[in-house]
Amino acid sequence: MDVDDTPAEAAVRAEARAWFESVAKIRGEGEGHWKAFRAKTDDADVAQLNMAKAWQRQKFDAGWAAPHWPRHFGGQGRSGIEAGVVSEEETRFDVAANFFVVGIDMAGPTLMAHGTDEQQQRLLPPMLRGEEVWCQLFSEPGSGSDLASLSTRAERDGDEWVITGQKVWTSFAHSSDWGICLARTDPHVSKHAGITYFVVDMHSPGVTVRPLRQIDGAIHFNEVFLDAVRVPHANVVGDVGDGWRVAMTTLTAERTSIGGGGQTGWRDIVTLARLFAVNDNLVLRQELARLATLEMIQRWLVYRVRTAVAQGVAPGPEASVLKLLNSYQVEHTGSTVMSIMGATGTLWHDDAPDAGFWQDVFLFQWSSRIGGGTENIQRNILAERLLGLPREPDPLKGQPWSALPKS
Ligand SMILES: Cc1cc2nc3c(=O)[nH]c(=O)nc-3n(C[C@H](O)[C@H](O)[C@H](O)COP(=O)(O)OP(=O)(O)OC[C@H]3O[C@@H](n4cnc5c(N)ncnc54)[C@H](O)[C@@H]3O)c2cc1C
Image (tube, rainbow, N blue to C red; front, top):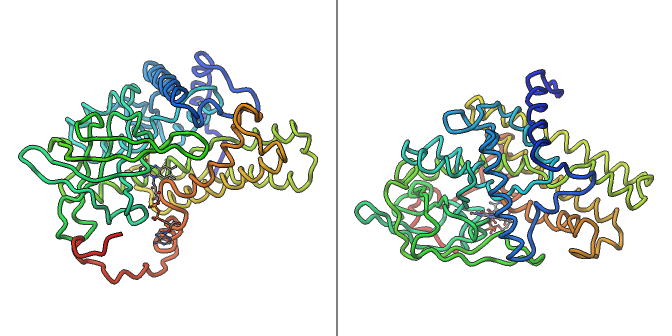
């Protein structure tokens, strides 16, 4: 595999860099993405959202909103690798991103693959312009890893569905206009077969969003209560009862997106090591070499998965390898920055270097191991689909959902 930019990729890099330079300030070396990380107060969260919306609109107006999307949906029709090159360039700049991941990286591709023309025309343009934020209403208090066991129910009432249930860990729900939502429409068939995929207007009567404040003060995810929420039948994505298949598109896109995103790079950590005058430490140098190697492997895996997607091949276990590698990298990054900082690592927020960005990086490793499917679940996928090991025994397989024990 040739890992240097091809002439075409180098041209995209130069074009993207020139545009970003013309509109944004480059991050100082070692500065970290602290503004784009976790806001610790409600006001800071709203300010970040507004900055992110303005930045997304600016990208849209200049044609850079979603380079990997097909042209007829408002993208640039770039290959997965070219789109990766553009996002690598973007991470060098001091810009607020973050809030559009569920929309542009997950809901968008799902609507392109399974949505109706009307859904695509109504929902995709404001998503790209940064006007409407999206969240993912999948996990429930009793259904995370075993997502197909979900209990939120949807009952048909004429041209509408009435959805009732509770979702949890819903990232960005407190800022969202739309949610992609899985609900059970037939409890009398097996758990995977009775699920339907909906698009829910988060401003509908009956939707209550309760933010969950994390130990670091940030609000990232929420509890969402759906109390007889009426959703038009036109908002069903794919066929009724075929929601699990549609959800697979979203979940694969999610793993690829999480695996492709890093909060920081090894060069920032080298700068941090110089700042703390520990860059001569031999053990640390080995760790930095390991991080640099991991980052490169991750980059090439991202290219590989994105190329498959761009060629119309659904990536399978590669997306799980990528997600697993990402959490491994985040874990090692967190431990390394703490060992560099020593006692300074115990400082917090404005008292710490880079406004506590490195403490956030350290703490983020636990989110990264769980969100988008836990490390154990990714390992199960690899065991079954890559190594060909036997599936986990499931004595209740094929039983109707209504007959299954519930947690
Ligand atoms: C930062 C973050 C953001 C998130 N954002 C969203 C979001 O926007 N929308 C959304 O719907 N969800 C979201 N989630 C939820 C996430 O998808 C779930 O937390 C995750 O799927 C795990 O489910 P759970 O928390 O119910 O844990 P459980 O499924 O109860 O798992 C508990 C433990 O058991 C292990 N385990 C479970 N089953 C198996 C098995 N078969 N084999 C081996 N080990 C197993 C797990 O690995 C884990 O260690 C987010 C989570 C985080 C951390």
